[in-house]
Amino acid sequence: MKPGDLVYVLWPHSDTDGAKNRPALVLDGPDLQGDVTLLKVTGNARYQDTVKIESSDLVEGELFKTSYIRLDRILSTHSSKLLERGKAVSSVKMAEVRKSLALKNCAVFSRLAHATNRPGDDPALAPFIPGKSSVPYAGRVFTEEEVVAGTASMLDFWLTLGKEGDAFEAGLAKFLGVKRSILCNSGSSANLLAISALTSPKLRERQLHPGDEVITVAAGFPTTVAPILQNGLVPVFIDNDPVTGNARVDQLEEAFSTGKTKAVMMAHTLGNPFDLSAVKSFCELHGLWLVEDNCDALGCRYDGRLTGSFGDLSTQSFYPPHHLTLGEGGAVNVVGNMLLKTLVESFRDWGRDCWCASGVDNTCGKRFGWQLGELPQGYDHKFIYSHLGYNLKPLDVQAAIGRKQLERLPAFVEARKNNWHALRTGLADLGDVFDFMLPTHAVSWSPSGFEWDASGHTTDCSWFGFMLRVKSQAPFKKIEFARFLDQRKIGNRMLFGGNLLRQPVFVNLRKENPAAFRIRGLSAKENSSLDSSAINKLLPGADEIMEEAIFLGVYPGLSQAQLDYVVESVHEFVARH
Ligand SMILES: Cc1ncc(COP(=O)(O)O)c(C=O)c1O
Image 1: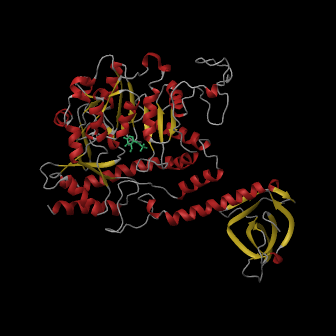
Image 2 (image 1 turned 45 degrees about the horizontal axis):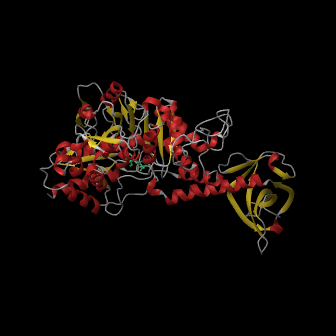
Image 3 (image 1 turned 120 degrees about the horizontal axis):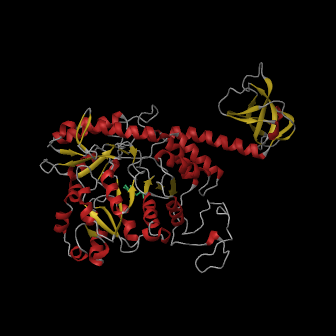
């Protein structure tokens, strides 16, 4: 008797009166005592956790009707109690049985082990114990579905990007309404790829060359800006509006330098779309590339259209705090120009000229028909390199998890909005000590919604966080507030790097290579004599954000009890002062 044999066992097993010989599958052969492990087999299709078997799945004997192996009925018995039937299923079927058992266990495991990671409105979410449990500012939100999808992909062990990657890329592009989405291993890599793609000679007169300028914003995440410098380009900083956290678009023209400015790259701060109408018109007027760092803004809308679909390229991050997570991961979205798709993929995949998907040959139909560079005629296109590329690919298992996350995205976006609204409403009476972030184009908030400016444009934020600034006249400082929140186990964050020009890396750069970047309106020479107070005069909004701003979580894993606890705790802190 061996694994895969179909046998008869008396069933019900524990109540032999009235038991009959019924079919079962041997899972493990006899041990030293002669005991075997079996799975019950039934002809009844009504059970849930089953693996179907047909005659074609048998390597010995024949099956008279379709049967179902029940994964939820495992028993051990002595081999002498079994009747052999001369029937056995194939090793392929046994592999399917083993995989199905593993995934079933995985789902049960995840429901037990991951109760704190479930969506905030999930009845199985672990209960919140005020003062004991934490209120993270963000985190992975998932159920057993993601764990099963990821494990299934690992069991398949394809590993490198494959069917899961293709499906995730297609799903993301469809959601955003862009031509293509290209997966990579982080949001920072996505930003690096987006800017690097624009340096390709294949763009001819629109190619970015070292020394060309890219307009960006002073306060935010460092890797929105780093790829500009990493490509030998010059970031030109404009200030942030401290109320929206976004770029002061009234400074764009001052940042422009004829013949030098070639692109604009900036982020939608904390899920608040920047003024896309102004930025797009500016880019169109001057023939500039626009790269939207959409890493914190998946699901945001500007005039009803999703952010990430306005620029030439846009980027996503899938690190856990973001709108959906693959653990690590990112994507570059190609909005319309398919040449950019080839370029982004080339930089992602070692700089190669070939655009075949992983494991595929000869997509171009002339793999041995190219002559490029000074290579011999017919040199294998797979090994022709047009760019100084990287390898920034993720694994297929990440995409498998991402596909499940993508299904949750609409609910996640709604939850982020609702949680923001709950905090805003709960803290509405604290306007004496806090200034609350406003969406771009909003002039005020009330419980019934936002009032919009006269521009005619509106935004709809899929918030990354709930940002507020501690007013200068408040009887406490931001840092005291942050410490209090920490004591209460309430997650809080600064707006990332604050005014990036204050970061050690930029202070060093200013000393070592003053022409590496500039602030809008300054010449390279003026820029080189910048000191701290000059920076403050030119970028007061970014400094204000750095000094006064803090954000709380709105991620979809928060329950009402957690939100109530945050509101109560903040009130208690303010009342103490
Ligand atoms: C605006 C912005 N851009 C880029 C990134 C980088 O993403 P990643 O952490 O996946 O590299 C982040 C990270 O949080 C971000 O907030």
